[in-house]
Image (cartoon, rainbow, N blue to C red; front, side, top):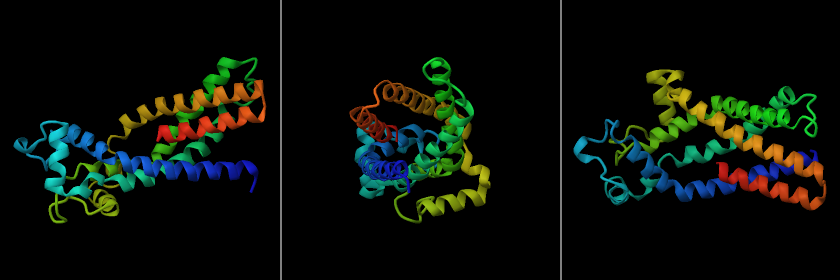
Length: 227
C-alpha cells in the first residue's frame, strides 16, 4: 500500500469516527428540525397534535416517544458517511482526469479552477446516486412519530428500506432526488473546487513540509465540517 493510500485511509477512518460522534451529538437537534419541517404533511401527526415550536417539540418527544427517539434515523446518517466520502474522492479523481487533462494551473488558472468545480460537482452528483436511499431512509425514520413498535411505521433502517421498496419499488427510494442532487452539485463543487484549487496553488508555490501538513489539517477539518 502506498503512502498516499495509507494517508487517505487514516484520514478516512479519523473523519468517519469524528463524523459519527458529531452526528450522534447533534441528532436530537436534527430530529426536532425535521419534525417541525414535515409535521404539516405527516399523516401520523394530526392537526391538533402538531408541535407549536422548538421547545414544545423538545419537551413532547421524550414524553410521547421515549428519550431514545431523539436518535431515530441517526444510524443511517452515520453509515451514510463512509460510502459517501469514499465515492466522492474516487469519482472526483476520475472526473479530474476528464476536466483537467493537459491543464496548467499556473498559466490556465481559471480553467483549472473551473475544472475543479466541475469535478467536485460531478463527483457529488454521482455519489448521491448510490447513497441517496440511505439519506431518504434517514429522513423517513426521523419523521416516524410512533411510540411503540406497533404504532411506528418502520422498525429500523432495514425495515424502512424493505417496506419502501415493496410498496413503491426502487424508484420509491429516490423520492426528492431531483431537488437534492441540485443542492449537492453546488455544495460539492464549492467544497472540492475551492479546496483543491487552493491546495494546488499553495503546495506548488511553497512545497515545504509545513505547508503540506497545514493543507492536510485543513482538509481533515473540511471533511468533518462538510459531513
